[in-house]
Amino acid sequence: MKVLPRLHKAVLLNSALGAVLIAAVGGAYAVVATSDSDTPRRTATRTAAVSTGKVQATVAGAGLLASPSDAGVNFTTGGQLTRVEVKPGDKVTKGQLLAKVDDKTAREAVTQAKTALAAAKANLASVQAGQPASPPATPNTNPSGKSSAPASPTPKPTPTPPVSPTPTPSATTTPTPTPKSLTGAAAEQSTDEGSAIRMEPVAHTAVDPNLLIQAQAQVAQAQSTLDAAQRALEGTVLTAPVDGTVASVGATVGQTVIGTTYASGAGTPPGAPAPAASNAPAPGGSSAAPSGFIVLTNPTGMQVKANVSEADALRLKPGQAATVTLTAQSTTTLNAKVLSVGTLAVNGPAGSGAAGQYLVTLDIMGPTTDLHTGQGVSVQIVAGEASDALFVPTAALIGSGAKRTVTVVAADGTAHSAQVTVGVESDTNTQITSGLTQGQKVRITTVAP
Image (cartoon, rainbow, N blue to C red; front, side, top):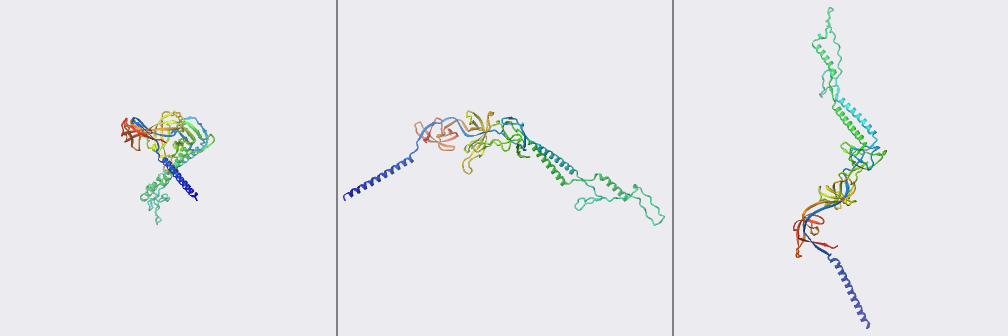
């Protein structure tokens, strides 16, 4: 019985020690958690002087070289190749013969079209001349006012001397009168007959308006058919639309090529660049090379097709200066200027709300002889520039927009906030148009990672 109190005291002591240990662990955990979440990140501060100089804002982009003079040319009339005059690497001049296809069928079509046109013109001339219409013996019109069909005139017998009958045997025969002795109605009748006979060779003519319209339409259709046949014949010959270098040839003699369609007022005329040829960059800044049976490249007027972000596109406009650096030759830098800025995004997930990329076209200024379509480049476009400008490091500015704040540090070390108006802004420096003076110092605060 004396042992029980001791055991009871030991149990109580162990329980108390366990509670203290749990509390200590919990407290330590709380301290650690609080320390991890509430400890401020380390920062560093320094000062920078307000200075004057040149501030230049640039927009960076990447793209490919392309030439508006590059051309992919196709036959407008298909057929079997009979001549291919060039090969990749050949230099050609505008108008030079490149290739031909068999033109036998096209020539026959032209001959047939010419024959049909001649027949249509002859038919039109016949209709315009009208058809002879003999006038009726007696003028007669139907109720509609149109002349009725002429009836064949009744043959009139040759005038014979009339015999005066007499009941008496002693009657004498009246002398036969000569034609010119006819008088009165007989004379008038004779005169009318003579007039009618004389008018027959110059009978009136009539032109049917319906036949005339039909004949004119036939001539127009025949002329259109001939024009198409002549274009098809011209389309059997392929010539260079521009000076350049042959980049590719799609087939060899004996093979068959398919022609592209061409209609008056639409399509692609013979020898012109193929409709599929395009220098517009695809999403991501890539450029689609011209396509065609024969592709010609020409570095004259070389351009850059580059993509920039939406925010940067808003800062660009035609005429801004730029520098272009070849990706494979970083030491080669070319001068350029902005030609156009696209207004439609060329990529970016539809409906995602994500900002897309915008196409910027730049003209290369200077020699382009050694450049080639498709070369990768990086560009730096001058979006804004200010000379002899008051500026501070961009990192010293707080806020966004035209009005910002800075922390000004006085000579005695005291600091106060000041509002400033900004101008041209680059990644490193920003122009200050009001709120500071040269020589003042501003605080720059950086946060350790």
